[in-house]
Length: 135
Image (cartoon, rainbow, N blue to C red; front, top):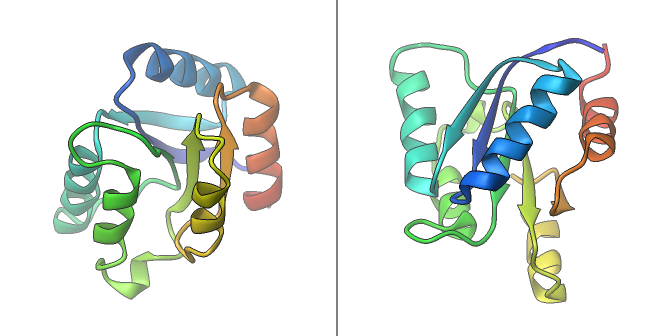
């Protein structure tokens, strides 16, 4: 499996970010982990990569429920980005929501490649990597 250049975590919960960052580091699957604490900060990061012609993250883990710009609002803005950017990065939703309407809504969004219920685990990380990032 190839090592990813960058994974972007978008989540407002500091302990969750700490846990996910450690999990990613332990799995040694990415050179860099960038943490943004809401959807706006995540979009700002992506737009700065585009403007500075820097590589986009290979993978985004996006929390659904956040204050400020939540995951749904992030996705609405993300849809407006240039079409050529939509294949990269891969976007996975992280959620504690058990609402079937949320799951159905995620499945209907082309930008979302999957979703994982929190808490995130090393097994879930390996599953995402094996499914989407095999050489």
